[in-house]
Length: 123
Image (cartoon, rainbow, N blue to C red):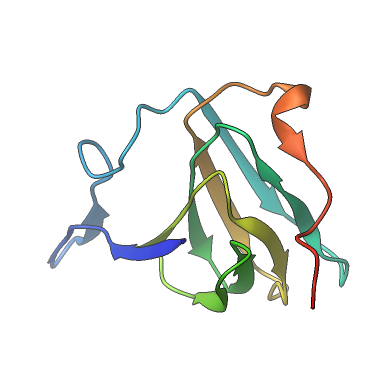
């Protein structure tokens, strides 16, 4: 199941510095970010092999995850929080604040065949 982790952050009079290397459970092969969103959901899929780390650099958003056993909503509202989304986690990003910038770090390059768009069956 998806897991929220706190990223090491160092603060002083000059500001804050947050570290990502050696923290994530995968090597980064793809980086992208989502911003200037409207009220439509993003995501709506799971993967066969890709693991992702989602970090809301600015603003906030909600990430809903379902691994067929557990459904959970996560609020990303601080750039020192990262949500690790595993391949089995069907995930939907929603409720983006107007200023939201969501950074996504992925374990794999984009491979269309890695995507599973169908949600888990509901009972």
